[in-house]
Amino acid sequence: MNRLKSMFIGIYPMAAMGIAGYAGWKAYHTGEALLWTGPLMTTLPFMAFLSRIMMFKNVARTSGTFPGYNALALLGVLLAGYSGWRSGSDERFVPLFLASIGAATFALYSLWYSRLGRKPTRKFQVGNVFPDFGLRKTDGSTFHTRELLGDPALIFFFRGNWCPLCMAQINEVVQQYKAIAATGARVVLISPQPHENTRALARRFEVPFEFLTDEGNRVAQALDIEMKNGLPMGMGLLGYGPDTVFPTAIVLDPKGTIRWLDQTDNYRVRPDPGVFLPILRQFAASGSKT
Image (cartoon, rainbow, N blue to C red):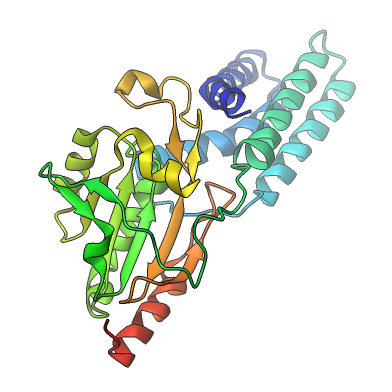
């Protein structure tokens, strides 16, 4: 299934761009703007969303199902059908066909592709002590998660630098650095991406977080949060492996016990700092240590 999703997300943006471009060209050259507005309504919202997350990388989360966009896409199909019926044009069925494709593929993106199909792992749960693992630091040495003992910790498993929502989430956490540091917590960012990409991320943000590489996705496999064939088609050309990790956020207390856990099943739905910051502040207020 993940391989099929990888192919879908590799093709869908180009298909949406093609439909929008063709509909815009026809609207301009035929003068039948209303007839071709339907296909534009089913594709332009996604193109605008994709452009924003790729260019600005400031969207850390969205709604789960995009109800407004899906309603607009349905309206586009209805408009294409009505306008075609009223126009009597020889091409009156083409806008309806393209609008239907646009609406259907957006529904697939928002309701099917965005769902990760994960089941909460049984390898770690709230109340359990987080296992000790070794991961590669930016300087090439090994970081063991047992080194976190004695301080609260905020751990993120993220898919890689290629994922704009992951980058927006990390940027959001960086912006909250002072608030997090005030709690005494350490921040750990873990990805199975190529090590040089992790080093580039650390250079980009220049904050005292632990930027770690899960080489071979070994830790994700051990924790049962590996996402097989989760890389979008085409990203392999940038050096990424086909397998990635389910986005996961964890809060540990100073004894290494999991106190909060987020295992989202939608890559666009991420926890807000307003959720985990109060938990970290509780540890600071109690002054608990090992």
